[in-house]
Length: 253
Image (cartoon, rainbow, N blue to C red; front, side):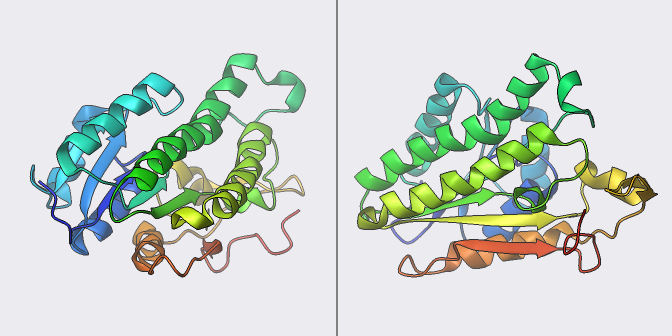
């Protein structure tokens, strides 16, 4: 049961990596947290590992690219905690490094569904709740990427969706000012998770070489998300870039 003084956050892709680290940070700051993902066992294990309970956490399986699944997730959130204060659109995926002419349609759609359609559908449902609840409003934080600014080689679907997230962020931030809804984008570079293990092993660079890239603790990202989440709604971090200090970004390519 939620009280009027307890804020509620929903995190997609929360079973591992940045999502799990952020769930821990928000829980530690007193939030009730809904952890969403495709694997219920991973979500329930994550809740145990971050010190959550059935009172302050909820695990919900969801395919964010499917409207019915997203609606069901928000219905479960509302039934347990009654409101939403923060949505962290974190779920994401990418394809094997491939040239444009060799990308299969199904692979393209898979990335678009998870990385773009998913954040749109989740934001749509969050906005509906945020406009109707009392007190009104809330904050949407979209996980962008360094690739929202500078692509890696052979990453067309991922890069295209992350550029599109910037448009989603700006449009929501503009359109919902009068509803006390803020929207932010956090662009993350080389957080140390399973998804970035290839950076530690060596990854293709724009000049054709393969190099090991520095990574950073995913908990640093979680603290950055927490900072944005805790701001009063009169203030917004529209864009933030957090990255491993020495990774190739400035001058990438």
